[in-house]
Image (cartoon, rainbow, N blue to C red; front, top):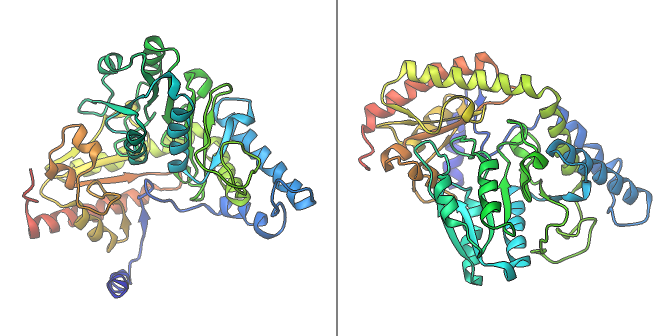
Length: 407
């Protein structure tokens, strides 16, 4: 395995230009964010924030200031409503498991969409072992939630509904406010959680305007460091801890807080919101240039998800018919263009994306999908390079393997 990887890396020697578009799975952390983090490893605030000495007090102050800033970006002024976690997965687990266990006396039914992130799907599956049931609401061909089916599903036994604000794979911006109103109208006691990781920093999002009970955000989704995220829990909402350990500054997540990563997350948030409208306009322009260019240069391609303002500004998910996605990611990588395939799976099985299947894509279409996400740091020259490389890669694979043979 190691030798195979070395051979693959050696094959990349000589690549003259690199364009990283795999911002769904990891991101390049900007220098400004790295520079903001570095002093907190060994110069200041490196202590445990619960201890009574200068490094500890500095850490406590830093974490509280960061929570205050993140809360402001989310649209609330109460910093205690913010809990830092090691990432989106942990925040979603805390939101769903914690609220389910804390409120199980009110009901044991959980309602989610059919295209929720894998970590939401899996934690609801886990909760079935504890007597909870899960109802998945279908979506249409663009990934929009069926609100009538949601209305039918919510009842007095519903303890929680979890609907992501923006789908991480196809960029669909869900009607979260309408969904929440339906849930609360049918059952005022039911809690409403949204994974806002792909909304935060890319579309307007305000927890007070939406009136959600819980919301997840992630650092690396906004070009911050991996390993840090946050969960918003509205004041008065009852959530149980799901881990036990050393008591820190947060009641819902035990252990010593990772001050440098919290600082990096906060700095990345500041940069994302510093010129919010200009940033999102730039991402959308590059995204549209990329998508339009692909459709102009190639036949037998399909856009997965909606067009225009109903789609996140950074998201481009396209199926290339008669072209296997994993092979295309490798071909593009050898040319210095880094993307991800819709056929990738967390269990490393060659399975189509559950999101693409839910919107009605055939297996062959899902297996031939590629996900690309633009950022404020990409340039028009980057997209021009991708449009020069990608058609050649697609045509080469189509010429070699033809159809995937899976329908």
